[in-house]
Image (cartoon, rainbow, N blue to C red; front, side, top):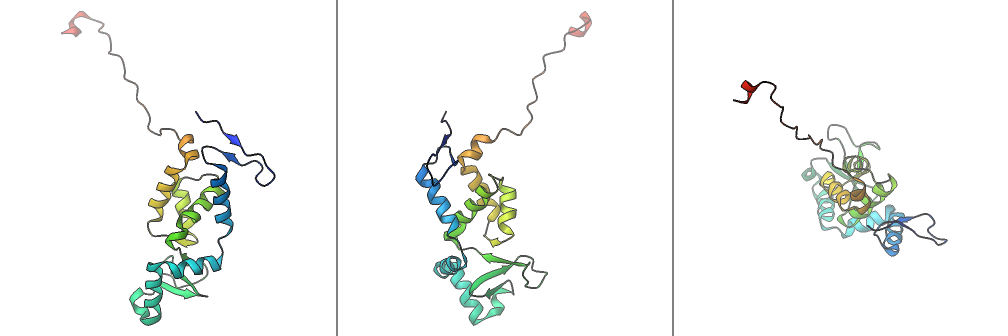
Length: 171
C-alpha cells in the first residue's frame, strides 16, 4: 500500500522511490559511478580468493589450467575455454566486495531486467561465481521487481459437473 514517491530536489530529479530511502538510492548511484579499473584492482588485491589465484599464476601458472591471466594488473578469466585469450574472450574476475554493486548497476541500467538477462549481461564483462543464482537472489530482493511480477502459472478453473441428460446415466 506504499505510494510511489518522486524525490524532488536539484540533484536527483525524477528518481522514483518505492520503499527505498532517498539516502540508499543516492548511495547506490554513488557506488555504481565509482567503479573503475583502479577500484577493481584495489578490491581484487583485498579479495582472498583472487589473491590466491594471482599468486598461483605468478608462481606456477599451470595450476590455473590456462583459465586465468593477469592483464594490466587485473585478473581476467577466459569466457570460453576452447578459445584463446582475446579482447572478446576475457572477463574480469569480480571481487566479492563489488558483486552487489555490479549487479545493482546492471539491474538499474536495464530498467529492472529479469535474472536471466541480468546474469547474461553481467557475464559478458565480469566473472562472478554462481552469477545466475546471485542474479536471481538480487532480483527477488528488489522491491520494485517483486511489486511488478505476477503469477505465471495458468490457472485452470474447476469445471462444474456435467448434468445428466437421461435418468440411466445417474446410475
